[in-house]
Image 1 (cartoon, protein in one colour):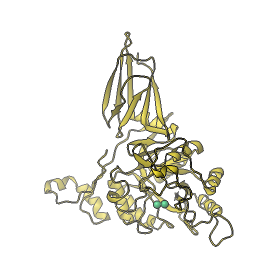
Image 2: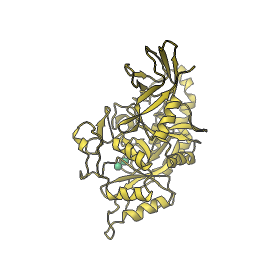
Image 3: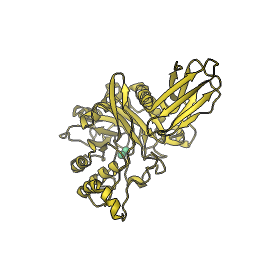
Image 4: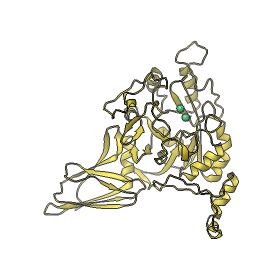
Length: 398
Ligand SMILES: [Zn+2]
Ligand SMILES: [Zn+2]
């Protein structure tokens, strides 16, 4: 589903097609000013993790409105997210969560799940996105927490605890160690990713990790560019180290847009909008928060699926059906069906074959002159670490 270009069609439509869109028009009339809004949503199959079945939702948990420095109103953000195929969003303005109350009735009308959120953090350094905190949470010096005690601004440790005590799930947004340049990654120079590239996590983040108060991290922020510590890797800009930290510290991975303008004009506009895929037990705000707390997410951006091994594995297994056959003469074939909306690239380990990309809902049949006893497939665009792809092992079907 690469047609993220424009989902909104506002045009004079022949009367006959209008009839088809009557239910949509009815929806739109409630919320606003555009004649027609069209939703394009990629359909993911359910995912099995052990005996449990999960539905896959597409989320964006970092969005701005005029309650901070964003351009679209809360109602417009809901309509836009619906049109772009999201199932759940959090509006996360800097310093306040005013947008939530305004967006909620529209979200209900559109069947979109809305999570209460805001962006806060350390003074001119780490930005933190907080999700799902109680309505009576009163932020103090949001976005301006002090590194040390005793100054004019509130101390971050105190505030971070208050936020999590209010039920807030905290994630590290665009994890670039502040925008004063102090901790910029070497890779900002445009050098290729050179593992194991590391940059220093500042004390507040290390403290929160040790205290179990940091729950998630953006491995991708659709809006950040040079100056925000992103790394150019695999043809896009992202935070590969964040994927390794998620693995090491058990953090929930996010691919959020941090959209400020209209989606069509914001960030890496040539790429489809980033999404956080969630594996939920139920489609509700509670179901979403439960999945986020349990770490059941996979980041989807720029043709990549990135996440912890225990989530990427089940997702790729749900998306694919692999049938491997081997004849008595040692020749064989492998049939790979892609049952989902994400193109997947398979590399056959140890075999002298070109990698095969199987597009959404396509099936590939690959002849193997000399089939191994056991076939290892490296899913090159499904990453479990910054430099490691998911591998699945297949035995021949008798
Ligand atoms: Zn930010
Ligand atoms: Zn932001």
